[in-house]
Length: 152
Image 1: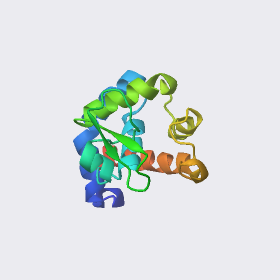
Image 2: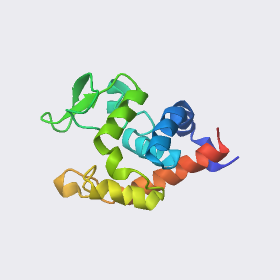
Image 3: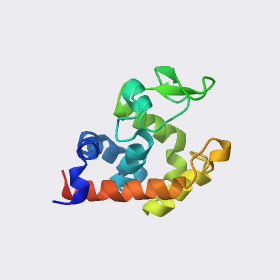
Image 4: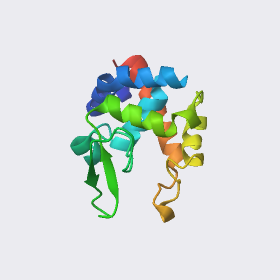
């Protein structure tokens, strides 16, 4: 069995959310793994606090379209994160906020770099982003692609 298939929480995340991520991916004319890989990275395969407590699988700050509440970031109480009822609505919010700017970007590397270009994440820890963000998301997308093809 593929090593990627042995990471049970990651495989479970992919299997639970592939359908909704696929619907958004089709709308945006890109592979499912782009949406699902981004979400997997942002929410630590559903185990991150914002996903666990607020169904915020894309780490979207409040205010965000379709949010139903907020959750406070632990490291900075001034930062409010959006709360959503479920993964599908989180996808709709991501689409409303960023979909038009990402439409049609199929390549994992191009998609990941575009996320930095459009300001989804600055790619710099000095201003609240994540150093090496695009590469980290690209790697997550590649792992999700393997899991979609070989594990579920």
